[in-house]
Amino acid sequence: MPEHRKKQKNAAIKLTVLFLLLYALITQQVLANSWIRRFDEWVYERDFLLITPGKTPTLVMLVDDLGLRSVTAFFLLLTAILISRRFKSWRPVNLSILSLILLNLIVGLSKLLFGRTKPSSGFDLVFTDSGLSYPSGHAANAVLTWGIIAYLIFRYSHKYPFEGMRLTWFVSIITTGVCLASLYRNTHWFSDLLGGLFIGSALLVAIIAVDRTIKSDRQPS
Image 1: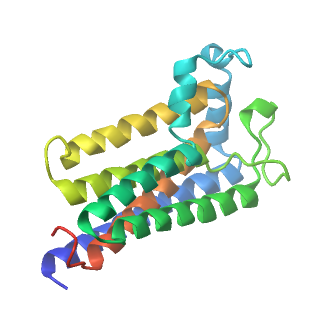
Image 2: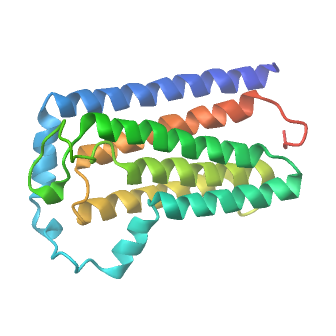
């Protein structure tokens, strides 16, 4: 393996481990009923979050939809297919499918395992049969799926306006918007969103590391 690829791999592994440790820390604090759940309650009790059911502004709903798996999966697969056809390689499609499988498997199982109730229920309980709040699928999906879309575009173009920094801002803005929309709609506790961001980021870096480690003759260097 070339030296620069080895360095990229090691850096990605360290970053993945960091995000996983942060996810584990937030999870432990949530389960321990620590300060972070007091902060969740403080955020939940803010007056500007007390919206009337069915009266959510259209713009907020549209931003919130950017974290829906059905919406993001469509854009991800469409982007991957177009790039795959252009470069005659299945790798973009394979990476996209891998990200969707890992997202649904890991985040979905975590939701079932922790069983945390949503803020809209009026209770903050864990290990309940009906709870699916932690970690936030919207947050994890936003950072992972839009991150993979940005990575594929950058990886196969390297052209204006698709520079890495511009696309990083693009993903950051969408992810932040999705998280704020979830808070405004009371669909997730603040710590749900933190947990989702960390596990989503860990998966994103891990998938990029896999792509950068395994060389392809049809992929730009």
